[in-house]
Image 1: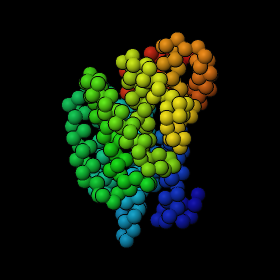
Image 2: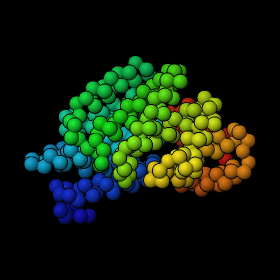
Image 3: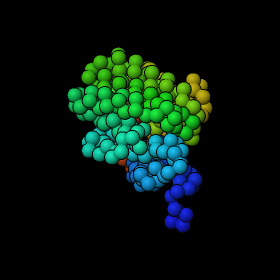
Image 4: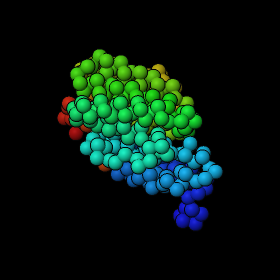
Length: 292
């Protein structure tokens, strides 16, 4: 490998992390946990303290430290709640300031999903405190770290309120998370790894709001013209799973066969069971929507 020849203290570290990030992002949409996690762990291994704290090269930490947090996005995507809780915090919260905030976000979501509300509230407070400590110049691609984390802020608030049973407030937060995500500056891949629409629609469906959930899924898949093309996630297994559930619930027949077939193909590529567009949903109704 080139890194064995040239080492990690050069521009190619940026390119390598970018490639790993793309791989992770794609595998997350494919429902492939193992390669997504492997890519995230390679990024963590690459971004060691000595790489991010090279004297005279502050841009390394300013622009690349956020990659270190990607493992937590994978764990949230695949609902690995206890693993998130058990993951140690970064050992240098100043150097790894963005990653520290993302860890608190993920731990808050995990505790909320497990209904550990006191712990979730503590993580939410820690998340806000961590965000306040992030320097204004910290970036993640074309976005400031704080603007990217504002998506997670509303995700965390929505998840916590939902699992407390405050559904109307939860949906307000999650809709705001969708708007903030849509308004991020364009990057490849997008700066926020877990589409808020997947959480919003999954929880809407759990509360039997199937019409809105279907519209959210169609928007995510790029089927209704409501979203710019670059933000579509065509044929992703998560939204297809939710769309098929919604179509079945309203007795749709014309579109159902088309999307059931797309879902069957997408499910064949996964390495984990897909039971909902967001594994924050407790009542997954697997038998009703997986089309076995």
